[in-house]
Length: 93
Image (cartoon, rainbow, N blue to C red):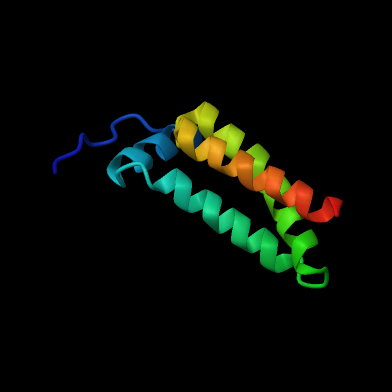
């Protein structure tokens, strides 16, 4: 598949949507998953449910930002919202 060459990309806000188009809309989802796992693994001194909840709460604002930038679609945003709600109820017990 042939893509247009990026002719006037001057900042990160312009290159990320281009990368997402070139990578068939998996770039934003991949970045979210990477953010989630890095934040989950960085909370290793806490219990798993608390680490999961904190990773979900850290990833959700990033998902909202990516949705505004057009890097993810509504389904992915709702999915991360569900993960955040599951994280909330896992520590609520």
